[in-house]
Image (tube, rainbow, N blue to C red; front, side, top):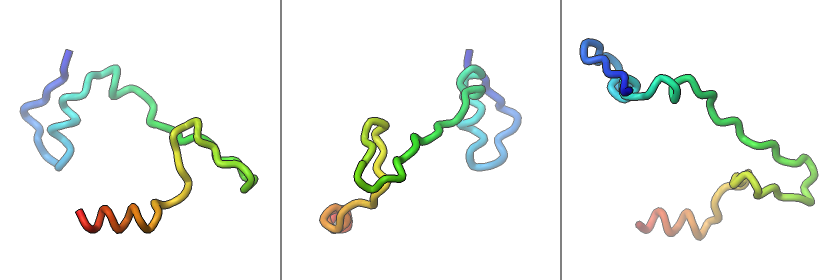
Length: 64
């Protein structure tokens, strides 16, 4: 069941919020994985990267 509220459309995110299924709206938000304090390790199993993109990546994005 999709919850729709056609009477209240105030606010920029209101229209999208009214289309969220109740069980999805009740879900907890994402909590990022813990990064090891030891610099000898880089944890990749949670698909997270604590480092910014390389300069070459930034240049390619800027060129696009």
